[in-house]
Image 1: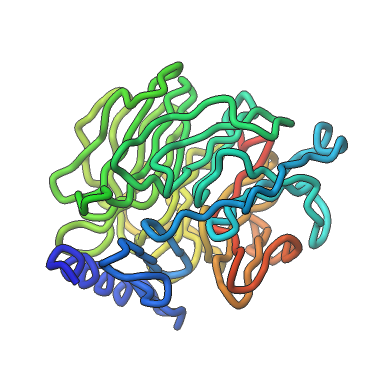
Image 2: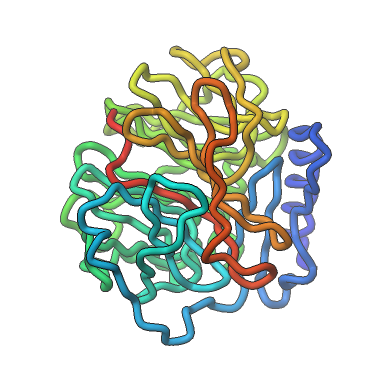
Length: 342
């Protein structure tokens, strides 16, 4: 194993030990998925799982499809890194069956987000790009190039700028954030920080400020804010944080997994520990339009599912296991259409 990967493994191991007290398994690099020679990485911290660099995962030439009813209903998308596809479900129901599947142009899809125009953006991790689908379409209408990096999470600002959290570079470079201004298909720039090591989670608030969660070169996971239009990041004085995608509710509360394996809710100005915690853990916490539910992707090889919880009480309201396959096609990302308003 290279000295770079040894250092990275140690950093994520320390972060995992400090981040989780729930007994969840925290394995920074899964030897079953690959090793330094193949570039395969699995990072697990708390209830979150991120992958990049292993063999490309495509949907084995399966054609995409969308049922006519999907055009009229609120939708839920779930990405399968291993299966190379995105399942589409009705947002309401109980253990819903898929009403569509996206396969075209996808290679190891992971992070998802739906913008205000109902366009689905996908971190196409092992293809080194981001693709987007219009609602009701089975083929992407645009590809954003992210050469030399593994995008794992995605966010879109109200101004149309797209941001990708790049876990690492393909040659072992430290992670960063690539952004594309509206209409650009090649990078418009990058967001970097002196202590970035592995960059995994991202979110954009209603004012187009960008928030990034990362494993630093030393110390525990941290949260960085890039004010709107700025490439100068500042660390937030938040405590009890870990690696997570970030979202915001209509009261400007910041929502992400906390360091104890729950879902933390931080009120502005985002300092100290969470003001409220829900016993919910998993990938990519996503709020529905009315904020009645928060959804997560449970990336577990033996028990894959997407879950919906009450955002008020934390009560489990829906579990979607249909469309996932143990050990071979599990969910890593989740997104909703219509998206939560900001």
